[in-house]
Image (tube, rainbow, N blue to C red; front, side):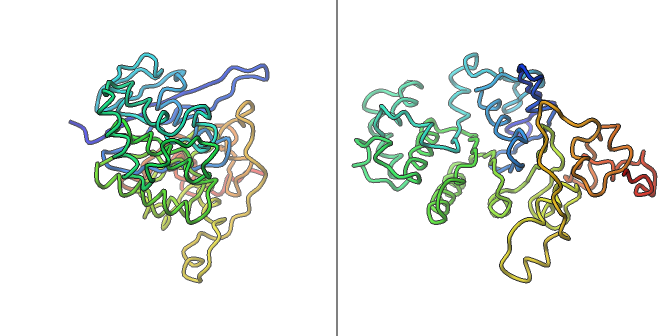
Length: 330
């Protein structure tokens, strides 16, 4: 049996709008191994959160395939068997909107347990166990989300995700709105639980410094497509795609050693375009300092440059010739 827990093949999600077709996800492929934290990084509007929503079944895919433990699944959660719903859970970016304000914490955690068939007695003991796991006192059970701080709400959301004993959790920027101490508390909780139970995570974020410490592999996403995939160590030492280099060069550092490891400063040109009006050819070429004539005409394909290191860029495409920079576009 494959060691891949999750396999995504040529996944597409388009949204029809009055302005045109929004290409939120435009043909991406990747895999996540059992027990792995796979990072998905990109600017706002890159499609990374939409990818998570399709994996958990909140959105149906336009086309493509998703496999869990080697078995192809239906994208829409309503059509998935309960056994699969238990396996895949999600922690959203904003716990204030993902927790029902009319339910107390006991009811919020109880709901998924009752949905998968726990009895009343089993539910009560499981809720107490989950609170212990996430380091919350039992008195929190009778409180409502409005009575909790932002970090405490997110901890409740994590406990709810743990409730069904999943094998895979999508983490959609779970610490982005929290202070540093609460970020550390939640990350330590996620890492500890992952080690104890062998969980796999899709960690969606724009925080590259955080990704460096938690992910074993990283994918960079831009305008619905994946630009680069590499192991975390390789990614920070040897970035290939100009967009990856641009992101890494913008990370703030506090030591000379960290500054030395950063790519040469690359000035970010413009903002990410609208997914309704994706530029022709390589979608990054209007912002790329290394663009060539071919970049405006042809969308590059993904190539494996070294083992496990994939990039989608004409700079590494043999069709552009040996001296690729002779065709720099103006």
